[in-house]
Length: 114
Image 1 (cartoon, one colour):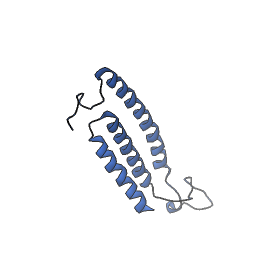
Image 2 (cartoon, one colour):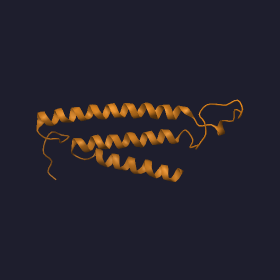
Image 3 (cartoon, one colour):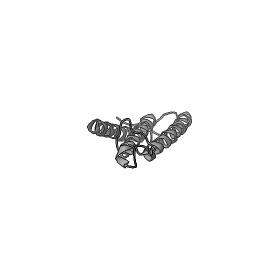
Image 4 (cartoon, one colour):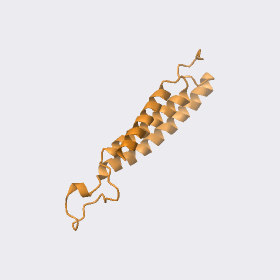
């Protein structure tokens, strides 16, 4: 499970960086979104991968931290998902406004010679 998660984080990060380096604004926004997903997975993986473990300490099971999931990364990722959604929506509105004013969607404002 850890290998699959590490590969997913690596693929999302490399794809996000590749898209950020593209000349079009929409590709940059998609790259930032992929990087946000990679960071969310990374934060989530730092809370120990435990399947079927409750996040709240139960008096009957004892207080061994290995028996429980860490709720802090889960809360951080949930907050980060909401913030990244709002940021992406804001970026898309700015993209549409800039495209309407400039007539194209290039990052530098001009046509790229590819």
